Image 1: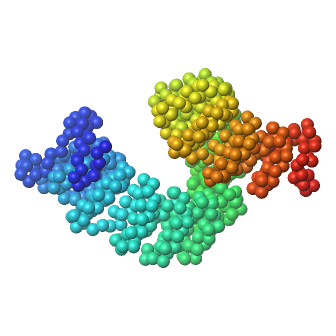
Image 2: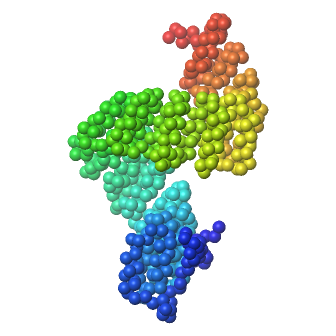
Image 3: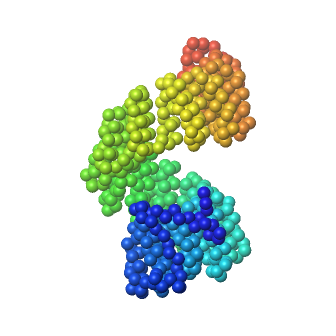
Length: 595
């Protein structure tokens, strides 16, 4: 692929044929080109056409007129055109026209260069964006904060966090430019999105000591990052700190804190923050109420969530589509489908049009309750309303069909999805594989798996976990182990679920020594076993009646603060019922009984 970079890089005329099929060419601007002269009135007419630029054809036509105009339109007009094209997401076209401007000798300024840099960054070509800096130097145009803020944002967009941070440090260290609030916010927002909360906090402290003092927007970024990182104590301390500095918190500050507290179920502290907001004349908005309603629904407190919705209406805050979707989701989570349907009908009565998420929530709820007729009714209603089900909705129904054992219907539904032009994602393939393995259709599952591998379909470790688990449960331990062994060769690291699945397969085959070896291997590989891993091995010991080893293993479990789950406990009870002497072989059980 040829680069769209200036300085020696070829101009790409990908719009030589426009969307309408008509040919387009940019005529060179030249002082001797008399036939291209257009009056000042024509120039004004061209300027007035900015608002009429609706597509790439319009933009290209206007550019063609502008470069033929005499006198040449101001650089401001070219900036406006480029900005319009940027908003229309014709990034490559902007870059190409800029290169053409250079060829034609048309003047440009720092605003146009900033737009070009932004275009490159939006194309995820920050390398080309950097090449524009040479144009600044060549034309004695000074760098500014906008230039470097855009570059930093470009690095973050390409997930090049180190490059973004290094550039920021270089700007500060070498006094290239003084970072302003927007640059700091860009860096902090980028770090926050990637979980670098401590770095954010450190940068805040640096900013507090510098010339550019943090404002509430900066504090909000850090507080939100701390809340998402579940570091609520530090977030609340920061709230108190900024109040002492005379920086008033706003609705965004409180929303972040309330969201964090809701996730921890600290409802009394939520109530206190609500009161504090009102005392500061900051009134909860629909987003604030939605946060609380969502937190309650995720804890199964649907009645309380509905009470909050009634309260918000009393306070003059109207619920939106998110409010209704969240409550419907809470009802479905509790299996209350009639209630969810009632909320759906109320929403329609309030003239709020359901979106794809509304339908998806109900479809998923009905599928979980194995009410496929109702799920399909809502699925077909999406198309009747003029919308199209997305891949997530298809995946939900597909999984529901497999859950009730309708294999043939699931296959037909998958074919229908393909005929609609939807591209299966990892979840689709995982659902198909899970379904085939669940009903013993190992050959079909492996045929699909081999086909996906041949096509080099992008996959992750969870996709391979589905295959390994399916093979193990169908007695194909050797095939499962072969796939496990090749993971490192295809650049995937087994996770705790992968190891636990293989260990379970070994235990089901009675290969307990090999299972214990795999347990040690996973630790040597830096993957720590969890409670499920230990319970799988404990069940293996019980299944094979190796009670003395079980006693030793229980001590190891206790040392790691793991306990038996319901399945292991049921195994143990059955073993003791058949052979009460087992109690004497495991002293730890006596100790627990005495307690």
